[in-house]
Image (cartoon, rainbow, N blue to C red; front, top):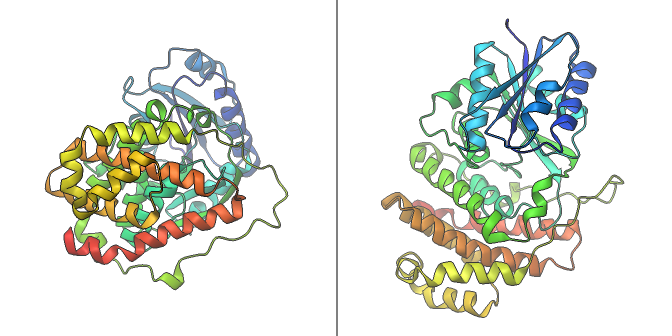
Length: 391
């Protein structure tokens, strides 16, 4: 196993239905766009109990591409599998690393080129993916990480947890040196934050519509969404503490520099699969969490306590301005007392905000719904002075 120019990592866990397709598209992308490079495909499995590992081992690659299937720490999470991939990439001294999810149905060979070309040409250290997603997909990104990352770092990264990324060897090294490397779904936010905190060049663009199996799990938000939200929010809050001196020195993004979403009038390709969400399930799960943490809710929300509790109980309307202030107050509270109950409480409130977003965009097309996402980010920008005052 000699030195490689490129490593493509595929973190996997029980993805027997899609793993061969993803590996095929990656191999085709390497052959088409990087035939002169020494490349390796690495599947890092986090303890699959189905045929994922067996299928990955049986997949044949061309002679100029090496394949490696490795075991990551069992049942630790996506972050642990990506860390394993990074260690392999470092061991073969790869110049570039790309990560693609193993549940992708819409991946194309061209995605490999998109993720690597800015790095190969020296224009970026980190490439982030931007997709056409259903207006109700990506509720954690739209309502938390996108507005928070933009507010903190003064740089608009629309999908800071898109799943598919490209990294220079320098960024890989910086990530592995970071003591707060998360094992779980906080990994995508972690990668984006480390890149921004180290003043690395970030490149982004659109890959196409994204079809992946995880959207089928939105019907049960408490079971499938809340755990992910808690992991992402915790990583975000902990990184805020760790990099406090750096983000406080960042020049805030001026309102007039915030990129108004472009219309999709000229796009004629496939549209994303609609996401099925139950507003009642979101409200119900959210209120149950708040009802069990009223004292903590009052500590964080102060004068807004009664209004928020009534909003959640009556399932009325949790607007973007209130949500932005609650997130900021929760972040400050977590800095003073890093208690997971604060994260859990915020997750309950997020379910109410998500339900409101789903309802308010129900009759909108993708173009108009994206304006609502943009507006949510502007609410956060407007609260940056509050963050600086109380944090």
